[in-house]
Image (tube, rainbow, N blue to C red):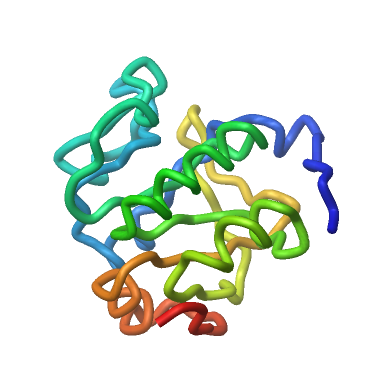
Length: 163
């Protein structure tokens, strides 16, 4: 398994915000535990948003969660583990199923996933869009979020993991 995290100037930042069309296809959501600061946020994903200053890992998660986590290795694993414990949400993750996180946390706990057909054009802090050098997956935990993923119409390959 590949334990390395790709580090280039383009993808090493955690500031890649979710495009609105993804949230419109999958929402509504009650919580965004990995939200940008309000002045950087292009729009609100959920009524409750935790920023880096709030430390969403230490907060109680309630309802249906949307998670576009920081992709730095240590934080990514912690947020995915918390999502697995919560078992009611959808995460937008790097398409890297060969790494330890996927093998030890995501595959054993998630309900389903979509390998997205096209690369996502994320919103950058300056309002421009850009796509990273990797593909993305949408991963669902819980029956309700699996249903949302399956019925979303988002192009890609839907795969059942643990239902």
